[in-house]
Length: 416
Image: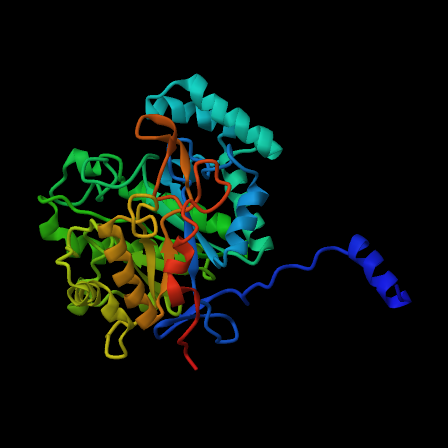
């Protein structure tokens, strides 16, 4: 070995690992693009990491170490994580992890001993949890991701920590809005929601890896509330956006639509005052095969037309409130059929959606990473076949799925 070779070999042992490439933050929105401080496009290729369930702790830490999960996310080419949280957590950040699991067992109506087994496994794999609080864990997740160049968008998923979403989970619509129905709104207190968003925005200050805040997941008015739906959306979402922007002017503000998050059509007739958080606005939509207002008629062209009418129009140069579109949730059951693991319905849906997103090069986030949950809908350690990872969080549930996303991984369009 040459002297130079000997030097490099020794240096590789003693020199610190070089930091991962990171986008030049803070990010901004410019016309239909998300851009960095140099005006270069940054594409959000994200995966959802649930942290909004009864335990109020990001899932999976009983299965693998935080470093293992963060490595997998970065190695697979994801550029960001949509990290979900509850208002319960945002307003009670300093609860210890151990107590949070205990509370989760009670709130979830499940056996505490079984839940605490999950806690012990999590501490075994992530020793820091033994002396950590809820917010410490969110901070550790954000830091581990950012060390690897992966960004975080905080998403307020629910008020009361639990599975989402339907019209009887109490988290769907503002409690003080006209047409109150307890089944859909009992936990969604407007002031607590605003306070929780402010608390998380304040927490994110000085954390460059946190590049955005999503104001609320899948807003959904019940039949008695729909009549005032647009009015409430135009009133309350700007109020929340201003609070977040004032608390942390650096973060993007992601605003989801009505009807379960995918209907931005009210923007065709009325303006939202996005100039109050100028250069930070992102529009947010969801798509699933079972989404009610995008029914599958067996025709992909009709499906794409539905997407365009409900949310894709915001990308157009002729849109009055043009902005980046982030499809912050889409997903399929990954082991449900013979189409490379997908059911017929799932395969047709995904193939059409991929074509749509390849055509407009929009930003996206897969639902979700979670191959299992500490607690979900009355079950401890419940597996989820919509999870990208296996139940033990060791690798892809469906090795073919990544390739099914085609050119969605690429940046094919941009501002220049």
